[in-house]
Structures are given as C-alpha cells and as structure tokens.
Length: 340
Image (cartoon, rainbow, N blue to C red):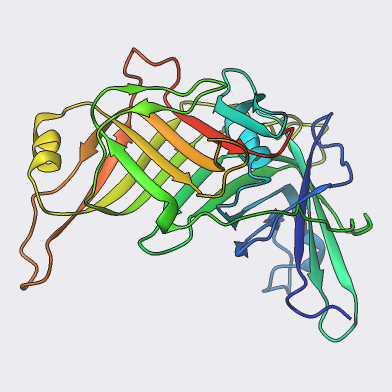
C-alpha cells in the first residue's frame, strides 16, 4: 500500500506539441509545484435584486499549466532535463563503449516539448492518483551548490493542458546512480579557458580556493502568448524563446582583493563549475557534471566587517556574449549512459 512518500514524477519528449505520450524517464525530486493555472472572468451585467457575483456568470477564459520541480545532482539521467532546458544535446562515446560525454548548448530555434506526469498518493486509500501535463516546455534551470551539501537543480516549466484520466505509468529508475556532493566540486574563475567539446571537458582557467557557495541560473526568456481563437483557451503553439539570461551568485571568503578589483574594473572572467566523482567509469573517465560560462562580469560588493567573524563577499554575476566562444553557456556530462 503506497504511503505519502510514494509520489512519483516522470517525463517523455513529445513528437507533436501538446500530444501526450507515456512517460518513461523518472526522477526522484525534492520539491515540485506543477499545477493547473486557470483564469476566470465574471460577467459584469447588472441584475435587479442581486448583490453577489453569480455562479452562472463565472466563466473560464484561459488556461495553462506550469510550475517547477527540483532534483539532486546525480551521475545518471540528468541529460534529458538539460536537453529540455537548453534545447540542443549531443551524446558521444569517449572511451571503451561505456563512457559517454553529453554536451548541451542553447538552441537557436525552438525548444522541445514534453509530457510530464506526477503521481500523488491518496491518503489511506492504497492508490496513487495521476495528473498528466502536456506541451510542457522548460524555461531554463537553476543550479544551487551549497557549502557542505548536495547540488540541486530546479527546472521551471510552462505547458498547454492537463489530464487526469491517463493511467499512472510504472516508475523505474536507473541503477548505479551516485550523488554529486560538495566534496566533488571545484570552481575555476578567470584565466584562459578552452570550452568543452563533444569529447572533452573544459580546460584551463584559474582554480579558486575561497568560494563557499555557488548558484547558476539560465533563463530561456519564453514568451507568454499563443492563446488564440479556436484553441479553447489553451496555448495553440509552443512558447518561443527570447533573449536568454545567465546569472548567478558566488559567496567567497575575503582573502584577496582579486574579486573586488575585477568588479570595480568591469573585467570579463570565465567561470567553470565542475563536480566529478572519484569512481571511474573506465580508465580516466569519471562521472562529471560541468557548467562552463565563457564570459561573466561580477556585480560584487565592497567587503563589510562582520563583527569579528570571517568576512565573506556575496557576489552576483551576469553572463555575456563575449564575442569569442560560440555559446554563452555549456553543460557537459560524463556518464555511463549510452544515450541522452
């Protein structure tokens, strides 16, 4: 009999926008807010003897679905989510038939759409109630890497429709999954970086030893239109991508003026955040999650005295098209998975 812990969440890339498919990739998640988003209007016509809005004049005028879910950084199954968030993904064998590198970059056209289904256990009934969302397009991602923690990644979605009649898919999860953690992490900030390719991770840059926390956010700039006559109040097309935005935050211990001076001077810096486990897939190929941003500028602060405690700097940053790298952001994954 299911307990309240037996919620599930899965997805599947759609062939046709808004046409549901049976989900087949499932994710342990730490939080979710996927929901139906209706918009109602009330008829404004006045009627003698009535002082309250009338139920038969309360009508649905627009509807969509959306929300987000958060999963932890793991060594398998993240590729589908980053492909959804960025739009372009390539998987390439890099060693001995069991090591692959997946490389994800922002699309210049349209993003894929997905069917997402969540199953919610009913209290005391022994049943799990499915809710299926169609036409789900990912708005981007936000990775949070906290001190002495497990990195988490949040994926926001906007979609077309909701269905409660589709049967619950049977959840299955990949085996041999490891969690990335703070002990696997490293950051390179500034210096000369060679961006990743389909077969090689990013190299170069200046290693840091004073960064406590890091977060990186990517936003596709999706449009909010597409609600047209004949669409029954639903989106009649997938959202279009707009101007993308890449930003984030670093918390650093104040041991030099390097970051302060880079902020004051408006210096362009590169940023490479890498998580790599110590359990090799084969030879020198280790499960890895790496995000490379070739050009950022810091939006920092002048360090402040902290009552005798260790002084830290909370430094926001924004990414730019630096005119050299082909992409403003790269996500590379080394994994034993043969396909995205």
